[in-house]
Image (cartoon, rainbow, N blue to C red; front, side, top):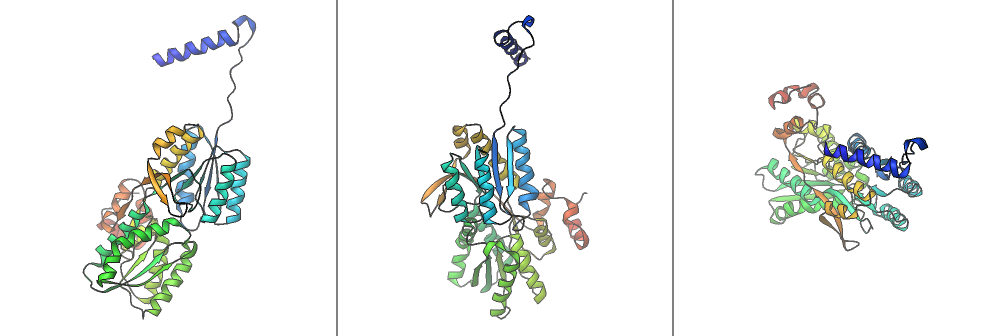
Length: 365
């Protein structure tokens, strides 16, 4: 009640001092300036469904709620389009730019232009190696890789000398490097001791699932069709690997990441050993809060949000970061994502998986 009275008093004071008394005509209310604009460049629609299905609506909702105008475009995996979108954002004088770079070179080129225009940049989900971004928001990618390796080891059980093929992400994506680093911290001692055998580590350009499947099949053939476990860097690559394995009549533990509907269905069906759930909602919320603070000119508040540091080994600098945690998902924990409203039972349990969902107590519409 007190706040309402104070607001009324302030309004009255404005009318008396700025507009004169009622006899001098209707008061002129202050005009509202244009909304601050935040530019967001999403990478594509193919490497993961998350960008359009989750990130876009979550970010849009957060900015609209904060009375910030979002200027959000998808680069469609095209470096030239990525650069064109950035140029338009600079022309429109956005207050801050959030980008998910397609490559280090493309990200750096945009960041240089933004810096020249005085526009801060947030690297969103992916880091621009050698870049100039002021902030980074993403997941602890080393930990994600460790979770993948732990999941694989748990599914393998005691199988001395098990042969492992690693299908990694794009070599141009620093996240893929960090995932591999986390996996290596767990698996390298096993390889060194001989308790596991590394057949081959294969990066996949552009996270291309079709290419990943072809490369995996080639490696499998060269190894005489022998494999006991596969580290696949995300659910898309895992799906491609599983397609090859099914064709060959082989079922072995396969890891993934992103907890996509297809990935979760594969976990429930026993074709995929584990996936890793990275709460996109948390990432989008953290990035939005950071961007909103910067757009409002609250750089001190932005620094208070980005309390972590991510090392850029190319630029040899630490980037102010918000680093988020992830969760390993196995068949018996898929249900937790349903109870939290992350995924709907109808999406998971269609067709042949209905009995499996019943066994796992996954029910609902």
